[in-house]
Amino acid sequence: MEGCDCVEPQWPAGELLVKYQYISDFFIALAYFSIPLELIYFVKKSAFFPYRWVLMQFGAFIVLCGATHFINLWTFTMHSKTVVLVMTIAKASTAIVSCATALMLVHIIPDLLSVKTRELFLKNKAEELDREMGLIRTQEETGRHVRMLTHEIRSTLDRHTILKTTLVELGRTLGLEECALWMPSRTDHNLHLSHTLRHQAPVGVIVSTNLPIVNQVFSSNRAVRIPHTCPLARIKPIAGRYVPPEVVAVRVPLLHLSNFQINDWPEFSARSYAVMVLMLPSDSARKWHAHELELVGVVADQVAVALSHAAILEESMRARDMLMEQNVALDLARQEAEMAIRARNDFLAVMNHEMRTPMHAIIALSSLLLETELTPEQRLMIETVLKSSNLLATLINDVLDLSRLEDGSLELELGTFNPYAVFREVVNLIKPIAAVKKISVTFMLSPDLPVFAIGDEKRLMQILLNVAGNAVKFTKEGYVSITASVAKADSLRDIQSAEFYPVPSEGHFYIRVQVKDTGCGINPQDKPHLFTKFTQSTSGPNKSYGGNGLGLAICKRFVNLMGGHIWLDSEGPGKGCTAIFVVKLGNCETPEGSIQHVVPLTRPICGDLVVPKAILAEEVGSEFSLKPRYQRGP
Image 1 (cartoon, rainbow, N blue to C red):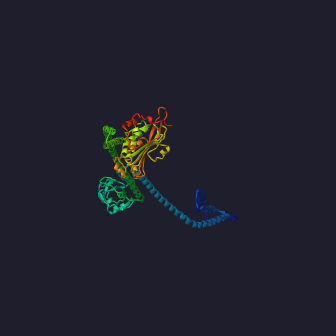
Image 2: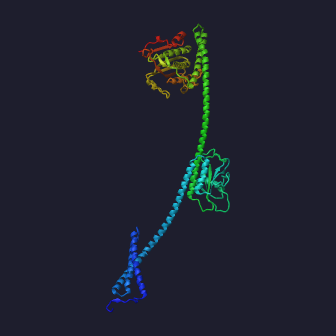
Image 3: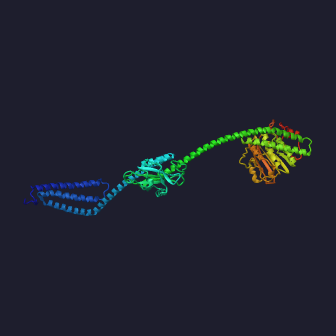
């Protein structure tokens, strides 16, 4: 042993304590070597760790500590100085690394503490977010129930169903202990309890609208918290001891409601309000949240809209019922009017028929008397009788024709006739009156006017006789001229009338008749009204001529039936008048296949000329025996 460079152990090798230290150093070294491996695994698996270099430094410190304990195993037996040197280097390195690690931890500990603080902050934030999410879910659930409630109350138009559904759904959605509706009174300034959810208070309780709490609710457009002791909140009996419940009230605008009667409900004006009271369960810690109050206000507005729609529907139904009743009454009145018109027409037809026979006898006898030798005084009297008889016959025909025109039973009697014969007969009929008044009467037919035409000869003669008779009637001196021609297409287009739409065709033509006089004329403001029945010109001279104002009205109806138009032109009172009408007639070919035209003819008929009746009968006979008077046109 003297030659061995060894260090003697402090204790004998056989002592028990040395053995325990030996075993302890072994396991300490094993643990120190395993911890860095675990740190390396942690760093490798960690996605984000801000202090990797600190872990590396800490791992080196642990490895060196383990190395010192591992080297220390050889110091328990005889060992060389080399072991002592290695042990010294290991401990020195461990000391350096441990000091560096300790210094580094001084700077890292505040960061680690802040990490803990941020962790707590995030944890608190997470809990707060959880609470907010729960509140949001609650709000969404409540909103969903409110939307369902809105849909439910808007799906019906019965007012009482709307109110009952509102109370039930609000109580179920918000977990209410009681919900009630106060409606304004009809006769006074009070609120009546009309609907309750649990029926815990008697319906009909009265609360004055002059209370400050009621005015506060009316003046706010949102839900208002009210004391549980106020009159509006007395919708539940007070029994036992309990924690006062939270109560809110909201106004319900009553828009456009009328005749809304239930327990004397009023006819509401535009500013009337109902009050809805909502009570949370007593003996509970529940409070009203802002979103719940907002939802209550939304529901109140929806109830107001639904009630207004229901009111409008009820009003429309009442209006429909009234309209149906009026329609029934109008239908009965129409039937009665039609029966009266038919009775009147039947009466007029009978009276007309019964009066025409004696009237025609008077006219015929008067005409025959004029052909005898009479004194001037007798002739004047007979002419007066003849004129009056003709006038009365015209009035009788006018009344009958007007009644038939008004009920639409008059139809044109189409047939072949001679236009010249019609004009000639009209001239001969007005000639006696013109002769008495010393008025010159002329008529002229255009050469393009056919000899024969298809139309209603009787109505054409009546139109012409009425217009020409008016010209003679309203003319004191001067002349009356009658001209007739085929209307050209250009002249038809110049007619400004919304009722006249000329349609030229090969089988038809339009005849234009103009009757001009030098009479009293027409006021311009009277022209639009002269074709209205029972209307006459208001000018001073015209009032003295009498008449019933039916002639022009009937002429206009006849002209419209014949597809034409009639109008009057006058420059004013005292300047004469021109009556013009255009009617549609059909072309009529002769047996030879051509259309005959009349020879231009202009004949003055003096007022003192009287044509014998035999000649008149010859000229206007039913067979139109006037062919010798015409010649074939070019």
